[in-house]
Length: 348
Image (cartoon, rainbow, N blue to C red; front, side):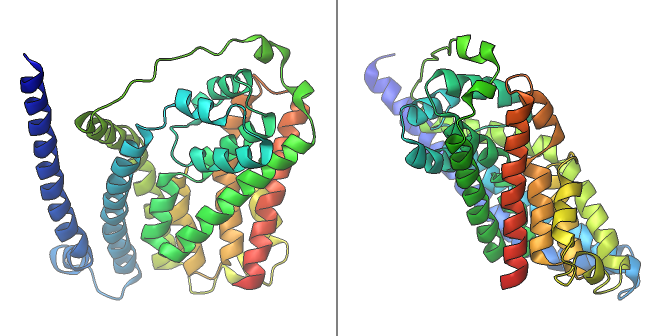
């Protein structure tokens, strides 16, 4: 096929992709705008559950929230999947290497929000960053930001709490990542990285340019991968939240997790650090707790500690970090989360 024919084929594929995206967007908007009406019809008309009952309230909550959150998740994961096609781990490493710490901390935290990351990739990413000359503190800013300030957490927060809480979480999460990395960098703890890490050689992967149909395909693959993995956690978390929403009395949590209980924030962090969950499982529970009287700062501190300091990630990082550096990492991040919790309880 000549160059003209190849160009024509590429243009045809691009227009087909645009048309399909437009049609799917229209269907998405119609369904999303009618979810509340549909949930009430299913709960009270089709299932004939008594309106105003505890069980009816819980079922309506579940039927409304599950598709709402999953639809938001599909839309945002697809968009972020396309954005991620521009930020491979190799390109991210190149962007961060050679940067001064202050600038590097900010850039690393921002890149962490759009870069593919999970606990299992913590070790290779850490090795790649350190051997490429990325400062230790900058690397930690990325490691804190990537799991905590991700699209799953932001979509769930937006869908369940609104844009103000989602923006608040995004901003404070970034600040914790930036400041934690900067503090760790100032402490000069490079000697507490396992010696073999510095002996490793970071491989250079070829960075290829993708066409827009290929980027759309990556966005679709991200939806299959991420939403396919987290939807059971979404459903389970919302089910727990629905039970709390329907059966726990109003303001019940105020005495345990309210602003008046000064010990609620450190207790929430202490409980959250050893727990293993993700944003999909924990945020619907947090929403239900908040509705029953828990303070916003306390529940945000609990959520951040669960997501940012998961036990599996800490265990995996032990392969490359000595115990003192791991303890410092957990302590600095947990302190930042504590401060955020108390600040929000004071101001909101």
